[in-house]
Image (tube, rainbow, N blue to C red; front, top):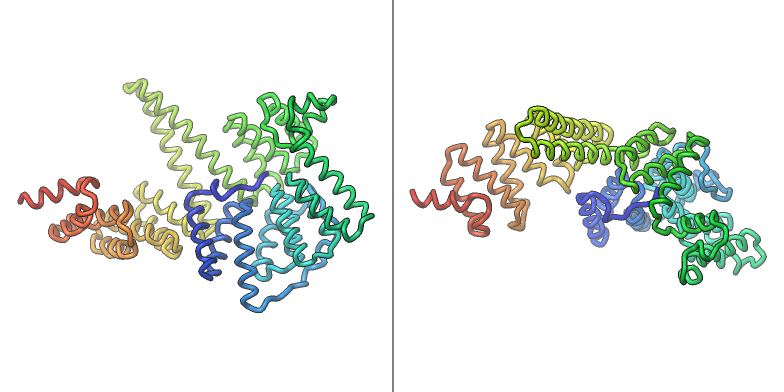
Amino acid sequence: MPEVSVTSLDPRHQKLIDNARVAIDRGNLDYTLEVTAQVLKVAPGCLPVRKLQRVAQLKQVKGKGGFLSKTLSGISNAPFMFGGGGKKDPAKQLESAEALLAKDPNNVAALKMLAEAAAGLGFLETVAFALDAVRELEPGNRVNLIALGEAWLAAGKPADALKVADEILTAKPMDADAQTLMRKASIAQTMTKGNWEGQGSFRDKLKDEAQAVMLEQAAKVVASGDMTQRLLDDALALVVKEPANLNHYRTIAETYQKLGNLEETLVWVRKARQVPGGGADSALEKQETELATTVIEKHLKAAEAAMAAAPNDPAAKAKMDAARAELADFKLTEAKRYVERYPNDYEARYKLGGLLLELGQTDSAIGQFQQAQKGPQVRVASLVGLGRCFKAKKLFDLAIAQLTTAKKELAQMDDTKKDVIYELGACFELMGKADAAIGEFKEIYSEDIGFRDVADKINAFYSK
């Protein structure tokens, strides 16, 4: 399972990370650490976020004078083995490693634990990142250097593996493991550049088709339809032989997704979650939710298309209504489940509040928005949500109080602030306070005459 980029994250999380980068430059390390920890819960394979977190952790330790924990240094001094981990749950290992590193980012044993957990989850560049952090702390640790080189190879970075091998051989020219690493890295680098980029395909350059297939995979060549199907067949065969190996399930799911079969992708992600270690895997959890939502939305679009083609067909309408209800119920169920599991994820609480408000469950929505206010990234949006809830309950004075606070906290007159001011004006209207209402609408009118129906409201007011 590959790492993910920041740009592939939810837009809200992308914005959080942008804010965290600004915060670290300003010395607000606590905010950066809070945000990165929050995002990594949802996307543990986002290496740029993990790197940002480590920078903040190291700066924080430096500011406190620094320390180095040896408490668990005996966890693993053996060469790091990829694909291992025995019966250990990599997701739980990852949580343990993160907790230890939050207390002491210079804990070598915790960094090794992070590497082992990342390997179990398929986060190959994260493995190298963790072992490279160990190298910075223990530059003379030959065992770790060999493991680091192997990690770079596994991550498809032979040039970095060559640098590690050269570092070892400079100190010990006859080191057999380093020589082997150098040889493997040189071959891998040759496959991905230079001699292999000339005319013809890999198969033209190799007589053995099986070897050609292996090289194509290692070089990350874009697979054709036939190759993708072959990869799927191989993975299906492997999962029969090793039914407890979570990586095989991931491979099958990813391959079905490449083939565009989202239903089967969802089936195999759900199977993966039943494998030891899969149930606690937050990345798989997120993938399952996103896939299930996409599949239900796909069915809804098909039902809406059928309804459009036969607008007078009761059966088509019933099917469309059922699909809409299924989507709303699924989103609500998943949002509640997520909040129960991560009660301090204030963005999730805000999202749940919005779903509850849409469904008319106003009191429950109020509770979620009140909790969500604690999150600085969704504070203003939660105030607006509260205002809308109180407006729906006809508690207009309470709604005005929330919306007025939100208005004050928004500096720029963008569409968000215009929405808040419009809601304020609407509340004043419903209270019969026409002058106060028109005062709010004027603020929008002076900036954007075309926003909603403010022009009509202003014209009607002055025509009286």
